[in-house]
Image: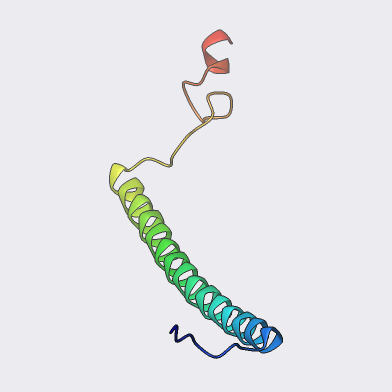
Length: 82
C-alpha cells in the first residue's frame, strides 16, 4: 500500500505561495533600501570630512589656491612682455 498526502486544491496553493512570495519580496526590498540609506549617509559623512580636511590643508599652505597668470598682481605672464 502506498500512503500519500491529501490532494490539495491548486488555486489555494498558488494564491498562498504568491502571497508569501510577495511578502518576502517586500521585506527584502525594505532591507535593501535601509542598507542603501546607511551607505549613502556614510558616504555623505566621508565626503564632508574630506572637504573639511582639504580646506584645512589649503589654509596651512598659505596659498589662495590656483591663481591666474593673466590676472595676478605682479610678475604674471602679461607683465613679462610689457
